[in-house]
Length: 326
Image (cartoon, rainbow, N blue to C red; front, side, top):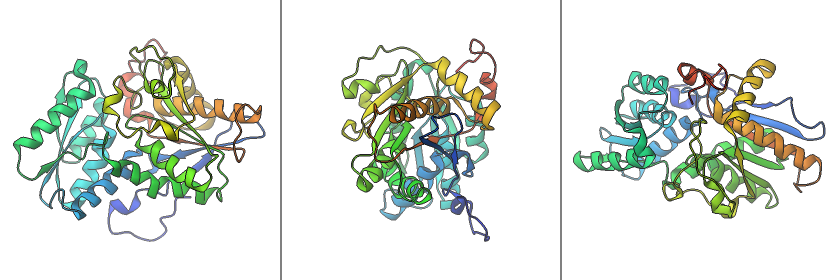
């Protein structure tokens, strides 16, 4: 599906058009696919919103060329924004909770961004608060705020969703994706439901996250190792629209860890824990379509593998479950 056969003028033009690859461990009568977002130049799905959001914000005057973007992020969004910011003439500052991947923070710095860490126990809410404080202190500075900015959803509605449907000639029965900001799933879901309102939409979160409460599910809040998806505070996840979602699948850390190791060993996918969780949930949805528990318009399930395991090697992602730091 990736097609870059002609020279392009900027790395921004290599974002998107990522491959859609069949997964091998699903039921025989249901096709299962993953969108491989590591093929983006910053090696994650967040490159999409980096380009889309910053171009849109410049166009509508939220920030001017030479201005500063300040974003609270666990890392991948920072990398995506940093790539776009440099190409678009913007300065970038990222506020990152301490516990998140060292590799991501090193890459953001390599791309020219300034990194400010906040305490782990303050969570993403603390990072968001600090980002807004910094923006108020600087001239011509703006917080794109991936957790609440509709441009996050719009990016996937305009790019990721159409790419999936083009690749499968519109025959998509279910879409399954992890929810951090929820922008990826919401954008794909909006596009999918416009194509066929009976498309099954499944959100994925770690066990210990509370997204499921938005659909009335019981959840026991706890810590989790899976990185990049989940929430402890629904108030910070303004983009999540439960009306677009049929179910939220809570995946245990151990299941996601077992799956990311299986994906590497058996299928050659070097993906991280959020992809492991998405794969577990997508396989479950595929089985439920196969047995008739889910009535989907097509026997096809699509999920998203957001990023690469290489971002988490320092945390022992391929070691035993007990050694994996998460």
